[in-house]
Amino acid sequence: MKNFEPKLIVGDCRNVMGSGEIPEDSVDLICTSPPYNCNIKYDSWNDGMSYDEYLVFMREWLTQAYRVLKDDGRIAVNLFYEISQPGRGGRVFVTSDVWQIMKEIGFQWNGIADLVEDQSERVKYTAWGSWMSASSPYMYNPKECVICAYKKEKKKLTKGVSTIERDEFMESVKGEWNYRAATTTKTQASYSLDIPLRAINLFTYLDDVVLDPFCGRGTTGSACKILGRRFIGVDISKNYIEIANEEIHNIASKWDIDQMFLWLLKSGVFIEEPKRVRKFIERDVKYIPMVRKSILSIHEKFGQEPFEITIEIKHDPDCYKSLYMNAVVSVDDYYSENFMDRIDTINEELTTICDECWDYYVTTDFQPLKTKKE
Image 1 (cartoon, rainbow, N blue to C red):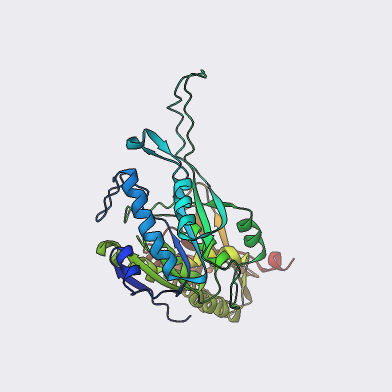
Image 2: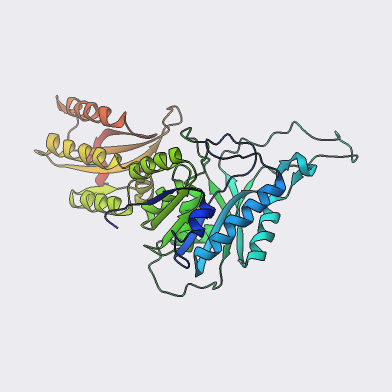
């Protein structure tokens, strides 16, 4: 998919899906994280309605979601397991209540993914109820999950191209998905990119249609662009749709990255751990010209002598940008008078590009050519 163009719609998803703007039986996967009703300050939505009102809302959009899904369509809904609702006397098992609604609508159970945050920070042991007593202890599970279901047919009715690899498939089907929490502050509607990447890769073929009725900042759309799926995003906030459009266009598409890797191979670059390099590049489309610039600069400055280039992803725990891409130049003699001057020039050229990028940076290094050949 060379030219990825998301279809982004401003409006209440219940009306958009119900009006025919998204045709019936046209969507392969709905992947979304709906409002949790926990008083988040969205710019166009009341996230503090009564719990009964919230369940009515969930039923309304899920009914329309069922209508637009194909018969073999799937749905992945990110929710808290439980949430506090004072009007109901305290905490409620929201995941159970939502599943009961989905089942009544007609959805078929396809499993549940327990989300395991790499660096969980929400567990707070400050409310124990009756301290060290059976009188009234307080149990609380702050984790989230993804309810996975299908419409009518568990098996896909048409053949297509799957993109999931062996290790990821084995991790996904066991029902425990590791993820890194979203840290963006652009909108209040944020969830981890790791979640839609996992769901889309597991449940869809290349070029399938994916819908997010609560588009937010476009996380699901970004995942679609990375994986080569078509995307429809709906959000009630015009501001969020504009942010989503910007975020999605900043992500490198599958086609972009494939072309980047082909170019690197043709340029004689050795890629150490290609999967890590790919994940690094896909986070921001600006990494592609940045990497091209570094490789071209190396060729320009070392083209008169034998050299090799290795690209690797490094981890620096002492740096606030802990991951970085390193282009290692291997040469016969790195003690020559102007060697470090050439390396420094390349790094200076990269600095202005890297400052504009997301969360990582690129640098260049060197090593003896004979060491690399050993």
